[in-house]
Structure formats: C-alpha cells, structure tokens
Length: 208
Image 1 (cartoon, rainbow, N blue to C red):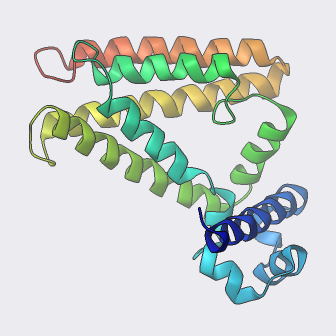
Image 2: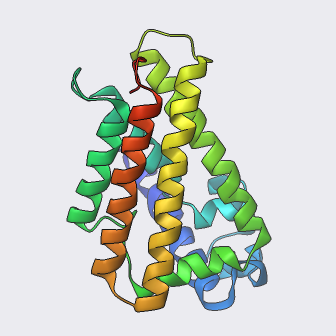
C-alpha cells in the first residue's frame, strides 16, 4: 500500500479499537459516535467516512470473514463438497485459535454486548442473511448453476444454520462452565453433526 492507504488503515484500526473498547466497557447503545471520535482523536465525519453505520465498527472484521468463505468455497478440491470444506474450516479455525472461533472472557463480553443491544442483534440477523446469500451464490457458481438456484440456497441456509446453532450453543457452554476446551468441542461436534445432516438432505445435488 502507498503512504496514503497505510494512513487510512491506521486511522480505521484506531477508530475500531477505541469503539470496541468503549462498547465492551459501557454497552453499544450507551456510546456515541462523538465519544468514539474524541477517543480516536479524529473528527465525527472521519468516523463516518470509515464506518457508515455505528454497528459497522463492532463488526469491523465482517468483510475479512466473507473473503475467507469465498476463498474456501472457490478453492476447494473437486471431490470436496461445500459443506465438507466449511467443516474442515471450522476445525482449522479452532486448531489455530482464530479470533472468529475463540472462547475467552473477552469473547464472552462481545456476546453479552450483542445480546444487550437490539441494534446489534438486528445487524447479526442481517449479516446472517447476507452471508447465506453469498454462500449460495458462490456454490451455485461453482456448480455451473444460476445464482438463484433453489438447491444452492437450501444448502447455504442449512449450513449457515448449523454454524449459528454451533456458535450459540458453544458460547452458552463457555458461559456456564468457563471451559474453553469443552466449548470448542461442543462447537465442532455440532458442526460435524450439522454437516452430516446437510449432506444427507442434499444427496443427489452438487451440494451434498
């Protein structure tokens, strides 16, 4: 990146870091954009230039996650189904201690921050729909089908439901037991079980 791009990235990361610290300390709905701007030592409009919506600061790594999904689905071997590719991704993320799948006190505070905010919960639902659409389109593309292919959308919705349930239940396990290893095991067991269900349901299609 050139100097200007690097400076923009530094500013964006600073805004995101300050915003998330405040969100976790005080709750998403109790933090203003003006307070974030002051903490990051930038103007209010600078914040909006980087993050059109306040909730975008909380989900700052969303686009990185989408790019990862695109890459995994597009670059999988021909004999590996989309569901199996995502199942392997889940195991890899846990093994690597990825921030996407991490059970820590900080991660628990993030979950609690979402649960305490109707705005964040609504954004989670919207993100889930957007990611399901992304997965369906990429899978249909890989199978040489139209973007609105019914089989691709059914498979994508089931796969995303599997991940959603796995994340919710594993975070509940961590909240109850404070045991990261057991939470991770719960997550992977549900991913494995759900992937088998999708495989059975989509048998006879390119997505089984």
